[in-house]
Length: 248
Image (cartoon, rainbow, N blue to C red; front, side, top):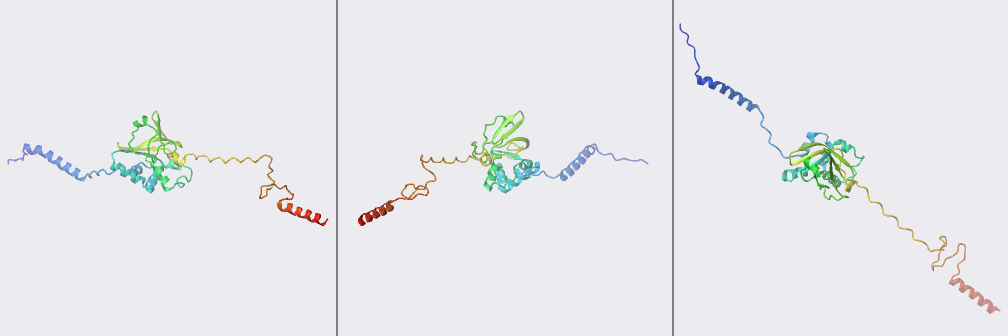
């Protein structure tokens, strides 16, 4: 009895590994999740991911400054830089500091932490001071923000506090977020108050005048315990003299 064995054609042997590989690849791609589409830049999500910025996130929400940042970033090519104080930085403020501010002043405080253009760490070395922030006027008694460097250390000064850039939280060429160890307090809100006006000098009194000497309506002085001899008293005396002379 002759036994016959089935032999696969050479072409089938070559295609079989390719078919198996194709099946494995197709199954793997079907199981992998599709990449999520890139969403718009959101400063709140960036800070939430970094952690330790709970107070800043709350203030951004209460004042709507966070929404302003997101709107500008997603509708402009100008870019933006945010100096973000940590929760520890806010804890370092004097008790009641934030509560003493009006709603408008809180907006100005937060806007003072935002520069309306993108700044890389390399640009800190050659930047022109003072920087103009979203708070506006950069005059020395308003909202001046100055950047100084010493080696790799970057300092931010306001005229009220000196802060240090501790870390780069986020940068994408359009938005840069830097962690700072202190809340940036502007001169306009926290600078020293202007001195009170000096009191007016006391007018000098006429020499020889007695402070305790009362005066009459006609300006003549009356000695203490004395008797006033005015026009009426003089007439009465003259009348008595005439009566005595008449009687004589």
